[in-house]
Image 1: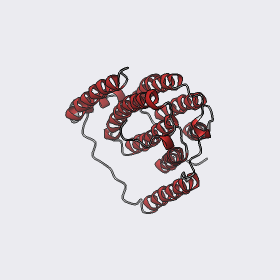
Image 2: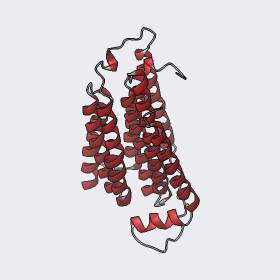
Image 3: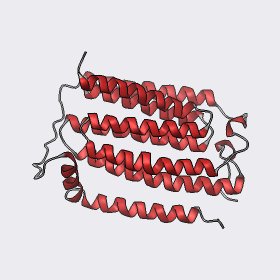
Image 4: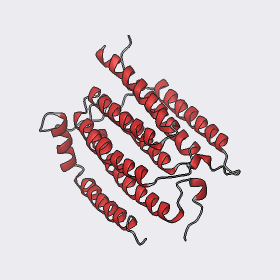
Length: 102
Length: 171
């Protein structure tokens, strides 16, 4: 069997990112769209860690820590917005989320 | 050899579970698939010798973020599934086409960057006074990246305040 190179990890990362893009563009449930965004962030993290290991420099892993922090903040605020919207409009369908104020 | 087997097994699991996340009809099933995806990514970090990130991945993603998602899915109890609502102006096929174009674009970038990968970037790793993955990462975060690190904590504080304000009853 052939050896695993960073190219393998890049291909895995690209595939995972594309699945996330499909989720964002095709689904209508905003919670699932948020989960697809988390998938894309994870794809980027895999890429960063793989190349950080290849060049034997931990800066990539330090960046992943920041990406995870931003993802946590995004999930907290985003889900808060979803809850506030659901209480007012009784829907999680993005096609019906077409108002900027109420 | 062991790394090869681990990589292919985990790749198949990650991609299969990610497809389940995106395609599942029931949102709770989607969340469970998401947890499994995060755990497999954590295992991949262990294969890549990034043990600290593997632990962080499990604690923050599988432990924190996914629980948040589960709470929201349980609170947002939709009697009418959003997928039943048909908006005639919605162009899902176009979205799928755009995602496919995105995949082709990313594949093109990957192929291009590896076709001319003669000059391998060897970033000079500064001499680290400590040993071990966690120690070295902590050293980096508390010396070179101290200000971004503190800013990340401010960001988390702001996000916490914002989430509490948004979730208040009278909004």
